[in-house]
Image (cartoon, rainbow, N blue to C red; front, top):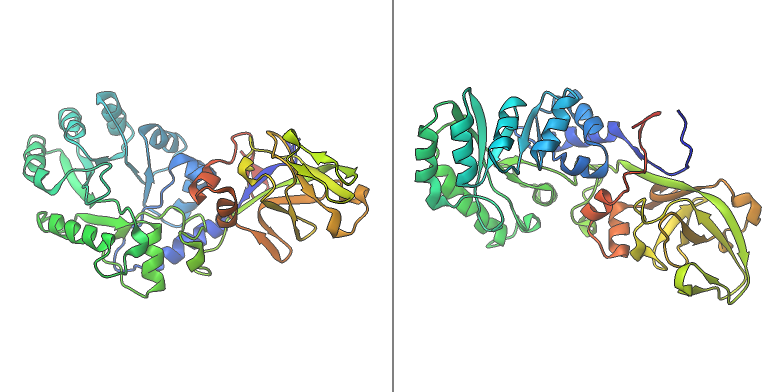
Length: 378
């Protein structure tokens, strides 16, 4: 089946696999590397990406909910799937049925699992070291252990925490260093040598890489797997490469006279006779409305400015300076995120221009936009 609308996202699975290998090579002494594939793999397609990661012998992946884990199991993903959020006995039953690995962060979860586990179950325990979102405190450890003793089927396979500002990990007396010190105290209270300890996020991994520091703990990368710099001004390319090409097409062109307005509200008025191209993608597809009159697309290998308010289904761009006849623009590729010729519009640039963060840009790509992997789309 061919695409009937010229708007799609192409995901480079080979580059994702390469990014995983390179991140794995940073920490050969610490084998735990758990890419986060929650939120539909940051909007790029969890099943396809999980299958690509399994080809690279990735044996752990992270999701936010039981439903996300079940979806991967339904598509025959066999890796350990860590579930970082679950509530209630029914969720515990599904965790056991689907052989998922729960990340336990409160006593109600622990109690429900202790009551439900009739067979061997690996769990990871999450501690709050400063993020103040999810997780036990160090003083809870005696009660945690007492709870675990009530069901010998439950085995602690991992201990983790969440950094709230991983980028400052290499700075003395930083918030992250304080979190690590707290994590170290917790680690000392667990004697099982088979337990894995995971702490680093993409920001921390990038900082350790830039500063040539060793990795003491396991990692849960998100942005880095998908080729995005946690701190764009401190790029870690070519360690990782971009994986996303989000594009559409110029489907119509208007020659507008000086002083004519474009799009809703007339927020842009042509200062001269202009050529305006209509691109078949709008905010329902993931072209942030806040890019109106400030963002750019790539057409004919050049950055062209967005003119007027981004619509639900369309965005208008100024093609005047390219120097082609208006009719010659029909059918031209228009890149929203990605590379065209020698120019690039990165996820990081879109985030900056739109006043969003990179996570929002990625997960904001609309459901109706097909995700393509090679010549196959889902």
